[in-house]
Image 1 (cartoon, helix red, strand yellow):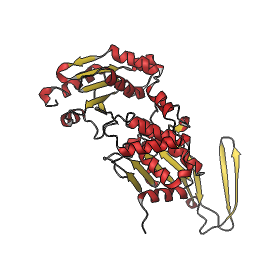
Image 2 (cartoon, helix red, strand yellow):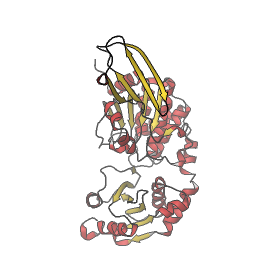
Image 3 (tube, helix red, strand yellow):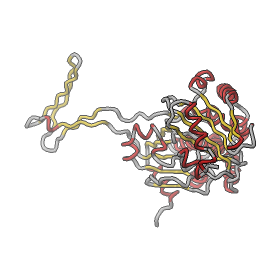
Image 4 (cartoon, one colour):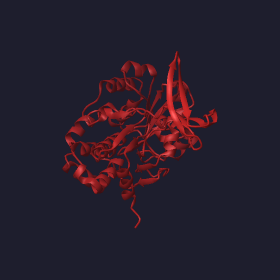
Length: 385
């Protein structure tokens, strides 16, 4: 009898010793919380687990158990492997000697001497049995983590867990549930089904965090009864709901507050376009001691405090010198022309009760030109609105 997808996943995980959990570069709270929950769960199964993302997690997630265990890179095998062909000649003795700035390796055979053609060289591969990707619609969405270790991702079996319809289904096993509101919701059902006895307060808290943040504390219009039920069961397993609400919704870091002040100082509106927008320079990031990861939090603050606009945009200078932006579009707004003019991705990076938030990059290298590009792209004469 053929195993279900869920059964295939746990069959693969049970057999694996070394597991890598990879998260997208554009980190969401759902991805981080789900990754931490799965890492804690697998460690209770006595697995050797690494959790990695080349992105930067929000400071307000630092309350989660093991949040400091998310690596920004993986230490792939860097050792040089010297291989000796002994199919025809047998090795009798191996020795080495350090001479000044060299190491000489001596290979002595039992008969005919070894020659250079008997020796080959390679680089040690990263010893991982399976990779689990969470909230990553494609390998490309893993960003630098994937590009720096492409061979690892291509050669290692992958378990792909996601809830987005645009997922590339690149895994050997794909668990993509587009009816789920979050990856945390999918994981909650998966972990409870197969190893319920391993669920504890910390794992439940992490999974509950993913569901709460993705549904905006169950206020999102796409929140399903299943999400409520999963959240309820996680509270029953000890999920600390009040701790989550306190850290996610009632606390704001000082860098974010400083950055928010700079966003307000540069705030502009365009009533014809039903647009409110602002911009952030590299100096703003430096002065506020914030980073690009706080921009989405600043945009959410903008949406919560300034109503009546169908579009909200924050343009910001990137560390590489380019200009990028985050755009929040009201659900009532047709997105075809906006997507075409600004080359928006097919999937939003975040969905709120009334808005979808998209990330985009512009060809301009300064904020003034980028602002003009934005306004031209949204001009009604171009058929955008």
